[in-house]
Length: 93
Image 1 (cartoon, rainbow, N blue to C red):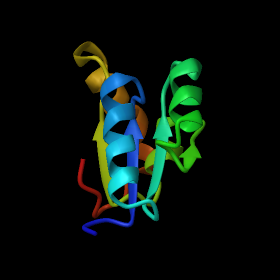
Image 2: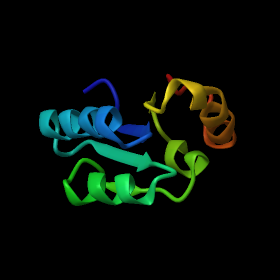
Image 3: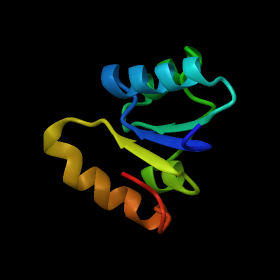
């Protein structure tokens, strides 16, 4: 696999589907997720799309090799600013 740990920021329809697809392809893959909508985060966890539900965007991306930002377009800038404190130097966003 190209990465050991993936973070998904935004676990609604698109982010949740990406996470579910990744976990289906490689069940051993660690997929951490965050969403400002607690219901979306809980649903992604319940469905097995996530191995960890993080409490903040920065916590979600800490140690991630790849970060998927799947939020509404008008929230991309804000979401990226929120995840920056946890982002590693080698992470691909």
